[in-house]
Image (cartoon, rainbow, N blue to C red):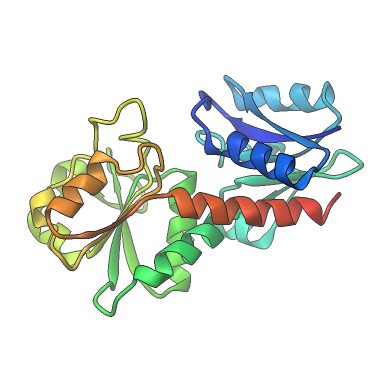
Length: 246
């Protein structure tokens, strides 16, 4: 039986295993889907060497960028973004990386965009945030990153975010893991009092369904969206990519 799975660290909470397992059972497909929980990305070659029936992988935190040196090729979008969340493994054992996060994000945010949504803050600078930035470029929405520390390409740190900045950026995307179950009482440290009814807050987290970040935005009148539908869209795109290589 062919195997697919999720590559990450501390991923027992993952959406992907349940989603694909149910899909394969419903469609009566001869695939299994499991979690490949690695302490370090350097363990990947040995994993694949001893498990030749692994035909494809999803990739999650913290390996969306770290996995790239272990791949033989990249799809166009993955190369431009600099992050991978889907990998195909061909009959010769060659690995190719793709990014379907950008597809999932674009499909889910577009219905909520209004004419006043011209500038976005991206909280976090990891692999997922790069896919979000790529999508904003395609949508002609200006964006800036917020990080814990000042570095190249980062305009704001959490320490220097103020009310006026928050008011000026009417889209705020949480690409950090802050607030993920079981740490449901945590949220990004931003001045929520600057959020208004014109704001759109989007959290890539899907467990819990409504994070503290989204709750705080809703209290200010903002429209809020969680990451579940993005995951569904990116998962189905990944499945389409895998099927093309089987």
